[in-house]
Length: 156
Image (cartoon, rainbow, N blue to C red; front, top):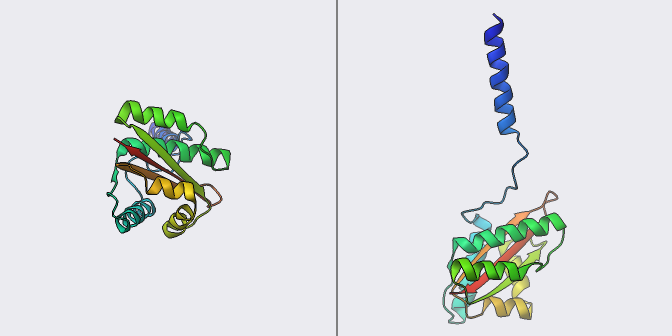
């Protein structure tokens, strides 16, 4: 009678170990854009279209860089462009980028509000309206519910 009980406990421990593992890096989606991210990208392209600028295309390799930087900012608890040269160099090497720029933000709770904030800033507006071909974004919340954003633009 003890063998089935032992097997059950071993199975239960295995399930708990693998489902409760602390190896999860974050809840940031490493592949597809969330609805908030998609809305931001659409609003950027809508703004560009209103100025007769070319629509930007998303590129998955950019997402790898926006994800890592957003995680970094959440960990630090502040927005920054720290290590931007590393992200730009990565995109030059892995996506043939010839120019890159980056917008970051935190605290905005909607796509419209973060876009409005960026468009009200000369430098951020310049990036949104710049001569780029591709972009991507990561929007993620910290454990207090504060949103952090990294938006990278590149020319290929």
